[in-house]
Length: 156
Image (cartoon, rainbow, N blue to C red; front, top):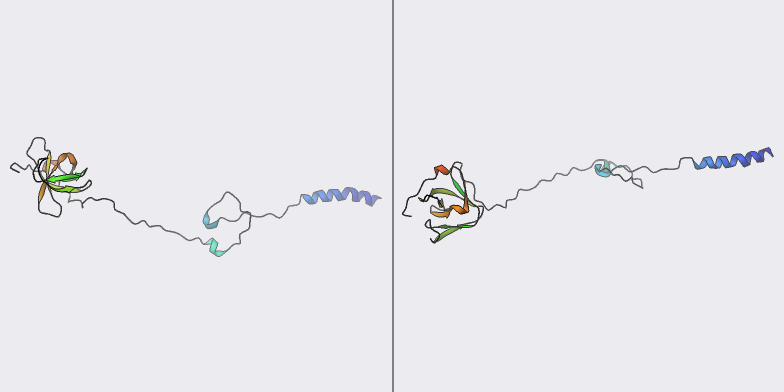
């Protein structure tokens, strides 16, 4: 009877203790290619030498050019940088014949200015040519020393 009592009391204790034994657990997988994760993996990933050695990727960007500007002239030479598309004329007069046009962003070396008090025209060198034409100062920004620009007296 004593063994029955012992079996009745001891057996449930042993059964309850066996439920608290540690169960087989899965370990979180190591991060792949060095990327840490906050979510542990649910399956085991076998360790492999290929996974441990992650490749190094180097990106090289090729330079691109979107500018339509002409090559910059030598320093200390006054240059007209065109702020908008503009005509370059035979004379410093809005009604004069247009010899060529400059696009916004292009530039031309300034060879002179008109003889008026307000200096409203630049006498610029036509790119790729020995000729010159007149461009309105309102369409340009001067780069370089303004004081070195000679005055061109009439007649034009």
